[in-house]
Image (cartoon, rainbow over all chains, first blue to last red; front, side):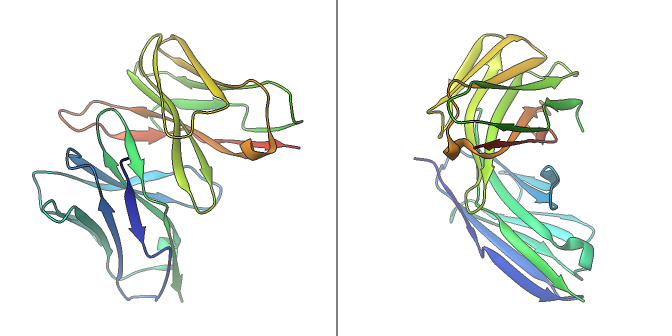
Length: 110
Length: 114
């Protein structure tokens, strides 16, 4: 069935360094790829998204890249800060339904 | 927050009892979803709705049923709760934004089945 694999499951970086989280999807019909940030005890919050007709999108310190041929997309966070510590989820949208990755716990060490 | 509320926010129940969780939205969104979130599994789709009385199963629908009699309300029912259904349940809605269908989540319901 449709699947989204997300790596790594945990990631620790020093404050100020960059963090990269990678996802691979299986449904070639997927055309929209959002990223969510979830802080402890809170709901997932959309932080950035990308459509299938775009290769890269940036929003301040956050960027997402998409390689449709390889069915890969990645989240890049530069100049990480302690408040970036959270669980990050990727997702791929098929027909009506989103398939989520299993999440990456990012720890930014001060 | 896209006008989404969930009730109750916390519930403790016993095995074998029926439980109904409610998702309410105020902005007339067509698509509504129920997910469960468990450590190591991320968010898994239970059921979704694409209109009043139009629902379909997700990947983990066994033991759950849903109903949508009004646009604003999407109910999730556990007919006979089991300990394996202890989880955090999130409702979500989709907004149409051209060809992009951005999804937003409710605050979640923490359910404990003893």
